[in-house]
Length: 230
Image (cartoon, rainbow, N blue to C red; front, side, top):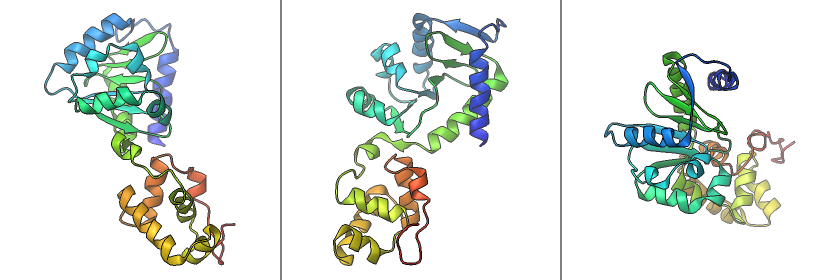
């Protein structure tokens, strides 16, 4: 909830284009590239970029600097820009995937943030930038590593097992539904938990939601006493 409020505040600021105070100014891609070049060259730089639009708007050489760069993208970007994202990870940048990604946002340092789009807005207002950093920490914590996302289970029968597991089906009922033995079903469950890096079935459900494999509402469905969800 708090992250959502921070995002709304930031978006409201972005929409107020008439604000001409020194803390806010519109920048072009050339200037932003120069700012990023200077920031990336600092050994202690921790830059976060949300949204795949940056991969199009900015020169690829900036991302080749690698360490210190964190990029958050959505599932569509993985499909459409997989090569660029693989190049980023090869350069030791950290890439995470979220089912839903905030509007294009770049946090350059503790003092500067930039919203992307047709007109890029640079923010130097300390309180706002601090709030955006707080938001970015929450967003980053819910992301899934790019390589883990690529290794996610997405084919039958494990995809079907994952949906029933996350919905709380009992093993016996789920096995009947999928027309397999209970032993085979449990073997798939164990494989899924290992691939998702989950220590429990509950954690496997959470990881599945984070990976965008299942919808939150689907994971929260409660089964009836006979094992079949209501």
